[in-house]
Amino acid sequence: MIRLEKIDKYFGENRVLSSVDLQLATGNVTALIGPSGSGKSTLLRCVNLLEIPESGSLELGDQRLEFSRERKPLRETVLTIRRRTGMVFQNFQLFPHLTVRQNVMEGLLTVQKWNKERAAARADELLEKVGIAQKADAWPSTLSGGQQQRVAIARALAPSPEVLLCDEPTSALDPGLAAEVVDVLKQLANEGMTMLMATHDLRLAATIARDVVFLKNGVIVESGPSKDVFMTPREAETAQFVSTLTHSLPESWTN
Ligand code: ADP
Ligand code: MG
Image (tube, rainbow, N blue to C red; front, side, top):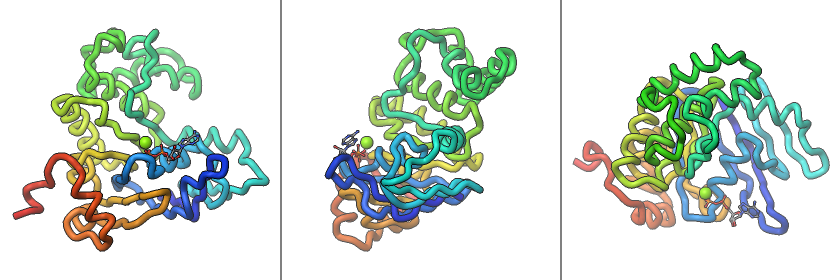
């Protein structure tokens, strides 16, 4: 279980997250939706402490952290929590000077201090899992966007994180390439991976996520089971936003 309580995040005077509460049950997938600038990326970054909130608390398994302006968390604590999470970015962020396999191995070698053989075996296992084993020795620049994102997913999974955080994982991709990334994420969801993903892609939000959280101006407007939020939203703001999303809802929902 991952629990965020009363999270406030400021950039200067700008309050970007306001008393955000979020619970991610183990094995559950949650989609984070909301207009651009609503704080989705910031919220994801608060879960792995790439951003440190000004107040509130974060609970990750047996670790609990209280935030305050006066007392920054210890670097050690930040690193331990970060190691328990994996992050996938919109623009992949692969290392261009490393091969696909080396990209997946990198964190295992430098952060986890694994030896090369063990790291290479883990990388190959994950590249197989995301369907890209044949590209292990290729340079990232020779891959399609969909392939690069699948490598990024393999890299994020390498240290066996307890939660996978995805920031608009399909939004830089053409529909066909997005579909192959959706397939990989769906497979992970089926295997019980806990995930939180910011997305504008209804295929991701509606078909993979069990729960949806709608964030606007740093405030959670509405959250609940995906089907309820998309089909029978309680709030007018949610209904208005959902109507702007692309693609269509699953057929099984509408008939
Ligand atoms: P979203 O991912 O939903 O588009 P973001 O979390 O990126 O939203 O941004 C939320 C707000 O925080 C925006 O107003 C954005 O300009 C601001 N913001 C994000 N990152 C920073 C930063 N590093 N410094 C200052 N302001 C930021
Ligand atoms: Mg964002």
